[in-house]
Amino acid sequence: MMLSGVGPVPAAKPAFKAADTLSRHLEELCRPGAWDRRMKDGEKALLEYIETEARDLSVEAFSRLMTDVYTRIGNMLHKGNDISRRMGGVLAIDELTDVKLSGDDAAKTSRLAGLLSRVLEDSEDTVLSEAAAHTLGHLVRSGGAMTSDIVEREIRRALSWCDPRLEPSESRRLTALFVLHEAAEAAPAVFNVHVKSFIDAVWFPLRDPKQHIREAANQALKACLCLVEKRETRYRVQWYYKLFEQTMRGMKRDHRTGAMPSPESIHGSLMALAELLQHTGEFMLARYKEVVENVFRYKDSKEKNIRRAVINLLPRMAAFSPERFASALTL
Image 1 (cartoon, helix red, strand yellow):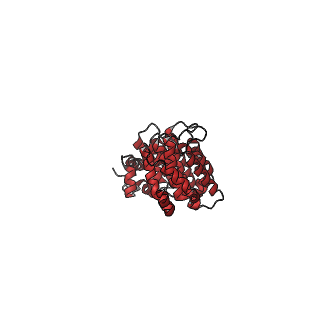
Image 2 (cartoon, one colour):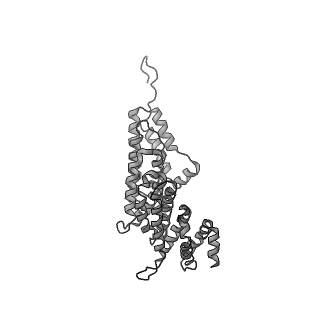
Image 3 (cartoon, helix red, strand yellow):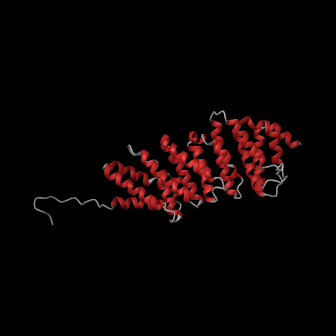
């Protein structure tokens, strides 16, 4: 029916349309393999949707939309949900990191960091923890100076999780290493303040009974050494020396008891040696003979991972000092 003298009334935009569109984008992120597809194709449909809404909606309407977005993502990240939903929530945060909100970027960054922090605290899935740490690194790079407090808080927590005497949870120790790795790469200025504490803490996971934790610790150590290598600091040699001492201690007999170190300690030390050779310049030159002697001692080890670590070290030792390496082979 049409009222007299009144033209056709435009159909009202359904109130649920925006919510349906948002739901569709979020559900897409929860599909198995969504993270890999995003890495491969680079598509960011949620990001594009939010940026379009930011242009079209009033300030009040857009604020309501973002409140809804944060609430939905928080629900996706709930510990009781399956991994695909939680991964979808992390992926949503990764996309929202690149959304530029006029005058509201600090609040957005703080909100997203809070959501990620809860995931990092309670995740028991390696893939989810690594994805959350990677996304935290992305957030830190995008947020610039405003993220320094966030990084500081996460680094301190991660360092406390490295010690199995304080943190019995294996998943948290692994998560801590992912976070420290990302923090060293994404926020070197903040991480630099904690290098000494990191060097003290990293030996716990480098000697962990679980190989995947030792390997994650070595990756974090590598990121730390790359940072130290690039930054001028009067503590550099002191840090190198402490790392070298701990490395040798993990490969030699206890001078008091005569006991051999555990296979885990040897394996962790061999991996750390490879990074020291790669990232400490001439520091290792005066210690090269001691390195070669200790590495060759384990070339016939019964432990497969130790033999593999020795094999991986050989080309690094050769590249570091070809003449000295050739001389060592003739002894």
